[in-house]
Each structure stands twice: as C-alpha cells, then as structure tokens.
Length: 292
Length: 67
Image (cartoon, rainbow over all chains, first blue to last red; front, side, top):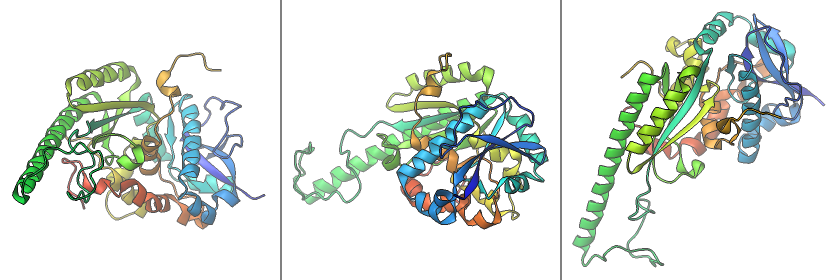
C-alpha cells in the first residue's frame, strides 16, 4: 500500500518527545521529520484516500472532512501542549520524508520569527449572534403571503395590499434597526477585546446552515492572547456578554494559533503579487490587527 | 489519562469553528509537486460554496472593502 506523509505542524527542533499513543488522521502513529532547521510533525496516510484524486472527492464529503479536521486538530493540540507549534493548513501532503524536508527547506527564518511571535500565546475565538427574530423566523426568502399558513403565528392580517406593504416595510425596518444595533455592539465588543489581544483576525461570519446556530453571526473574530492573560480576557468576554442584551456572545478556545500563522510568518505583509497561495489565503477573513 | 481539569480543551469543538481555522488559517506550505493541485487552494475552492455562499450576504460592516 502506498503511503503519503500528512504534515500537521512545524515545531522547534529538539523538543520533548511526542506522546507515544498519538495517532494521526488515518490512525497511524505520529512522528517527526527534521529539515530546514525545524521539525515537522507527520504521519503516514494511505494514498488511496489522500492522493490528489480521492482527496478531491473526499473533501466534498462532510463526514470525511470532519474526521480529517478533528484528527488534524487532535495532533496539533497534542503538539501545541509541548511547546510552541505552527499548525499547518488542512491536507498538507508530501510523497515521502524527502518531500517533507524539501518543503521545509528555505523557510527557517519565517518559522523562527513565527515561533517568537506565537510562543506562550493562544488563540481565542469570540462570536456574536443576534438572537433570532421572534416575528417571522422564516423571514426573507420568498415568503409569499398567500400560502397555506399552516400554524404559523401570523401577525395581524393585513386588510389591504397597501397595509401588507406597510407591514412588510415596518418589519424590514425593525430588522434593519436591530441588525444595525447588533453591528454597533459587535464593534464595541471587538474594539475592547482588541486592546486585550496582541493581534486580531476577523473570520467570515458563519453560515447558519453549517453552524446550525440560531440568529445572525455578526462577529466571528480570533484574538491572540498571552497565556497569562487568558483569565482576564475570558472574564472580560463574560462581562461583555452579560452587557449585550439581545445578543449572544460565544467564547471558544484555547486554540493553537491557526488564525495567526500568516501574520506571524510574515505571509500577510508580502501582500503584493509574489506567491499566489499566500496572497489568496487572507481573503477569507480580513486581518484587523493594527486598526482601532 | 489526563488528570488536569481543562473543560474547554475536552469539550468537542464545533466543526464550523474548526473549519474556519483549518481552511482559512494555518501555515500554507506547498507539498510535493505532484500534489500541488490538491493543496489548500483546492480545499478552499471545493468548500467555498458550502461554507461561504450565504456569508457573502452578510459581510461584517467594518471589514475593509471587498477587493
């Protein structure tokens, strides 16, 4: 059976040994490969599942993707518990150990810089959701008035077409108002948390279909926080959560610093035209580091 | 066998939070040439529809303008 090497993270060389029972995304033991002055954390994975073509298909399968993502995360967490670790993006693969070494070569400076920036810090996630609109939860999408109206708590039935339009407009306006209020609050929370963090990254608001969360996601941010400041940071999030009536504030973490590797390795600053992949990456979530 | 109480670390995180980080974060390194097409950009493209189709309707108000 042909195997490939799945690479989870890059760590400083000569660190403590990995836990012997640690298993990778496909259940095989996790090991290390030294190269380019750093150490990669890797495990073998079967080519029939991870090679280009099967991978392409597997990534479309949410169950497969979830197993892979959780397996990746488990290894990264275990490694990050031992010392500073740079998590790699999902599905970074090489043919063999030689390929891993080739991949690591030449990036020593970037990695060393990132180790310095991220050591002793964790990532914390903060999300803010509006509480679901009690009037007309189904809102928006093609809600025709006629319909069968089975059991829906229909608000006062419009007497005329003009009433109907007026009602709709009022409803839309109140939704816009609450949406604006939510944005104002989200911004206030974010501005405050920025002062407690060393760096910040805004992720795309989450898709409710994927998250299953009620309400609209108005803030999806990551904060890089020194480990000894985690307590005060979490406490402040808790206070802000209590103050934000009508909004739901969620804290996740501590995470390995996934959201800050581009910033820490300097990939964000290059900006311009150079390497395509590095330039394209931040598009999904604008960095808001130094603003505010 | 962990003895230290770390409630957050042991609670299963939401897949969507994980994907935010694993697909838009993490160091991007180019693996072997033969696999380059299966690198991150492919992941991003294939999942793009699922993960951000609705998101584009509700951009954060203070994000710098869309390029």
